[in-house]
Length: 477
Image (tube, rainbow, N blue to C red; front, side, top):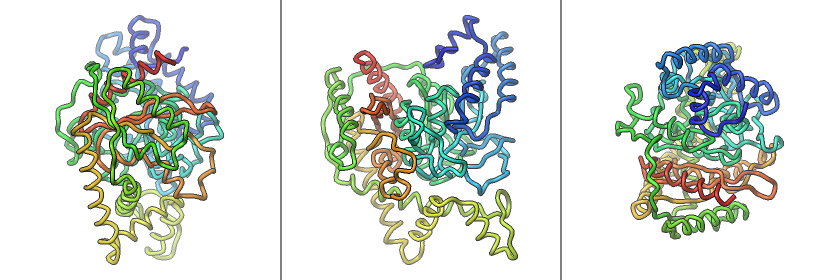
């Protein structure tokens, strides 16, 4: 069976009778069987269930009652609840746990007859930029298996890039959908904070966490966003704004685009990524868009602000994993010892580092100096970005400072690992939408990603400019 680049191609084959959903599921299960042993993208595969559901959907199609996503095979990051299925957040602390309910975003896909084929590998509790923090070994980049796929949604990007599923649902707290998408050569969309309900997404940093989409095409990301977005009675933080028809509305406008000089002058930026980004900027100009450089005064503060605040929220959110009600419980001779041993044994090194950091910045002696100050700086960063986006439709930058690095290369240098989030955390700090689209390769054949950010709830324009960039890139490749 051929590799489908978009869901519309799949629908066309199904509508013409050339393909059934059952045949499609068999194909993806064979791809998983062939590749997952090497790439470690899936932690759980729901083969029999997927086959049964495919047969039911084929019947629905024959009767004309199938949902909009009939034939879409989806993998979900192992941080989303899926009722009666295991949920581990790639951590030992949740061993043996099964979800009691289904996340709203996943349920909306199921309601439109998408098929969930399995849970995907990730950094433990979504904390990481390489997938090396998983308790179940790292996923591997399908372009070069000696390299990381990015994180934290590494397995999700690997699965799409290696055709083990058509679309993956990940989470993006500081770039966890966009960075692995860039490393694996696929598309990663982070919508506006609150655009999609977080109900059923295991919390890392609640004021940053966003449900994201990894796909092969902007078209697929648009459709899946449209299905998942919108109000939800189970999430008090979700937006009640009307959901546009992302999947059918093409604007094809000429836009005003900005790029921050500081992003292209940073010492950590790979020269080939810089060249690709500048090439994209020049192509936008040639295509009739108005592209200008802007300056920011707060670029150096974005990353530390992000890590102070997310560590604090992680410290609070992960306090619920105590070995009492569910998950791992280490043997002990007292309740206090049980708490300590269960958490010490259950959490990995990076999660412990962030919990300890977060507990420190929330402590009485340092709360004002770190947590309060970081919240104030976050507001300044948000205001500065939004002020730029009042005058421009988009901000364009590299997605990552480097291409995919070798497994183990940064394990002894957490600061350099954190710098991999240099360009992606801005969108999460400000709560705005952003997308990474593949834009060429470096001299080792590793994918390069270009990132575009827009003002809050401007996903429609973001998807439109992404389509335009991909179109002129393909025409000139």
